[in-house]
Length: 163
Image (cartoon, rainbow, N blue to C red; front, side, top):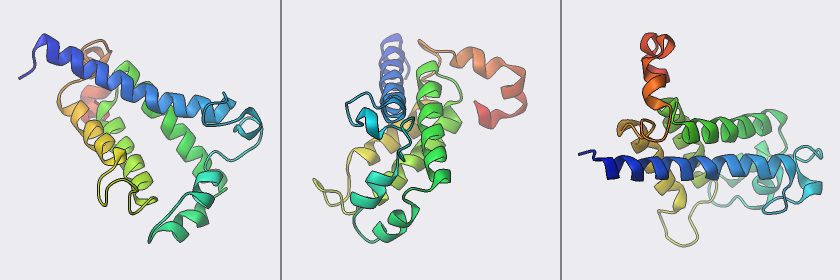
């Protein structure tokens, strides 16, 4: 199934997805003025999750998510997740872990906004979920990435879940 063109398209999709998560990390950390103003950045002392969790969550799980707002542990897990997911996808390494962890992240984000505004079931988070689960299965890290080398390392050969 995989041709050179397919490999390049998957690599492009992987890198675009990676940059999506890495950009969210950078903007929330430094307040680059896109989604996050400088005075509301993580480095300025603001919680990267509090605004969304307190004000944007909807549906049956809203009170659960609102209870997490402002938690230092939640902030750190979220930000480390964004950074690691972005870097892993851009480099093409650890795609199994990135796929499952990133899939869980976007599934949680989806569940915080029930029902989705533009469709009663599906939104971009569900599309991201399927992309994140698909990329490792199609060896998307091997083209324009370090996936081939990563899978040959001793660490990954001993612990296949790191592939």
